[in-house]
Length: 390
Image 1 (tube, rainbow, N blue to C red):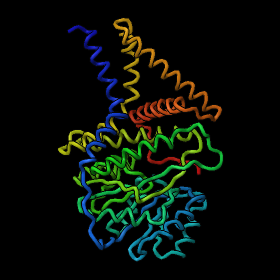
Image 2: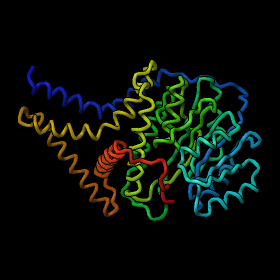
Image 3: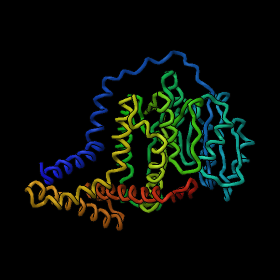
Image 4: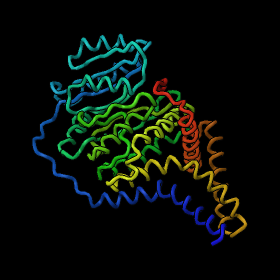
């Protein structure tokens, strides 16, 4: 067995990983989900007391609408409390919240005098929560009227430790760069989340709408920044509970208004995702084989894809003269990256061109992962950041 033969095997193994994560894995879990039967719901399920948790920083533009959105929820407000922590906001967020606290008896406001970041705020809010179910959301999220009821209703199953609702992304009306493919990519993610949720191994709840049993909550690390919703999800799965997904609990959020804002957000999430994984290494080889399979396929393989693409291209250039097959694969890669460059140029003119824009968004997302990984290695990712512009 010569070096060239080994290199060829290595090449195709590396090619297989991204294809598995983005194509084969969704099909495999779809097949698995066919054989999973949903438990029959308990009649007259007694809905539990819930605590809705929101961390806010300088959210004067959306915070009143958020509270009023909770106020129209189809839920027994004798069993509901909304706890909002203001992380040392410097705009009018605190004044708005205090005025709303006088209006709604179920609203509890905690104003922090020192800015410490979302994770620290969530930890403190959970300690103040009286509900047996914790429902996590964001200041810019908007629930449909039955979202809270439908989400919490999933806890009739005692094996369910957490449930994610469906988060729909909508394009802002004003000053939006139409070159983004975020919504199309998110729709693909929603499909995967639905299938994972059906088999109870949802890897990463939607941060704007998900709930867990309070006794399963583990304090989020604050010494190093992590992705809070991913950390909470994996901590529930680690305790051998299922994490489900329901389409019936719907919420909406605006996408980022421009590519640079979206890119910075992806970099931040990439850096904190790597840090989050370091707390759950045992899940990579869990006794729950489906959980490990999902974690590797949906997350880890995605996170290493940009590095694999670089290695694949380098190996291909080495093998290009060994066989005509590798001339074709190199040519396809060049076409692919040229398409990404064309998509980038189109984005400068705020244009969406089918296929080309999708290729650009894929490469652009993977570049963000590389930047995020560098930040992770440097330890320069912080738990305190400026929220996305509203």
